Amino acid sequence: MPVYIVAQIQIEDREGYARYEAGFMEVFAEFEGEILGVDEAVQTVEGDWPYTRTVLLRFPDADEARRWYESPRYQELLAHRQQASQANIILMHGMG
Image (cartoon, helix red, strand yellow):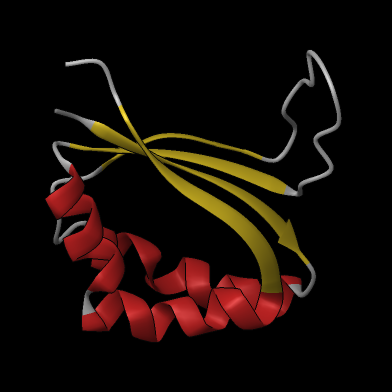
């Protein structure tokens, strides 16, 4: 069953975040994920959405999503994002 990762990111240090971005695609390409969307100008339909960036990723299953997120290479890269931004990130199951 496919899973999706939704990330709401508030970028606080663009230079620091750029270090995360610089290595992201190389690491992400090692896994069976797909980037469905990255947007810094979402249109809020209801409620508040005060985030700088919204990201939507798809993986074939939860195991692959966790394999990517927990991989040593991504964890090393992740430190740059965590120093430069605040985030809410969820993993949600798609429809079979």
